[in-house]
Image (cartoon, rainbow, N blue to C red; front, side):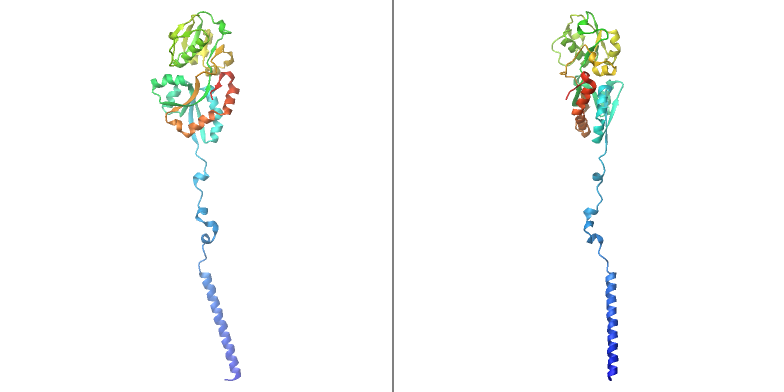
Length: 303
């Protein structure tokens, strides 16, 4: 082989080696591009199952609001309940205040589950009716006392009460007893001993030096009856509703009265969370100040 032929052969072998090398490089690139790329979830530290899961509804949604229906006397009970509405709203309780024209229907309404609680009565009144009516009720908290008082359009003081004066008193058992006890405390009458059930009528009077004549009437009618009487013992809530100045009472119960107005529920409901929130909201320093500022001597906080 000539020297020239050898050079040609070497050059040819060099070209072939370049071509073969280029094909191998292309095959490697194709293999690399055709291989599946790793999953982002497998390679990214932020894609763990706990991080990617959506938040639970209980963590992201506000607690469901509960409606609580409370039956009440118009004054001061409903007004006190209206005062605490915003506080209960913040705690997830929508307080609905139910005022009936006839307060005597508030216990039947509770019995029939038309309302969740009522706020209009004291324990002696509840005790006087619950056995007869078959109420299975529970008292959850004391809120206030409305000192019952003696009012008159004709007299200026207790000393002006003359012999044979006509005195109006409530005709429901517990408040009638309460009125007679107040008259006894003032030295106007004396009741027989042994009255322990918060019940009494004029028949239980054993000494009546001024020969007072008693007119037993529905409590709600007594403010309207004042022009026809020498005086009457009237519940303070009725005095307030009638726009009578409670300071005009000739005499009244003191702050030690056992007749605190209470929250009453059906037995078993005292453990409901919304009832506990109601009781707590009604017995705060803010409510005490509201009662004292708004009602003065007419309504006394009992907590």
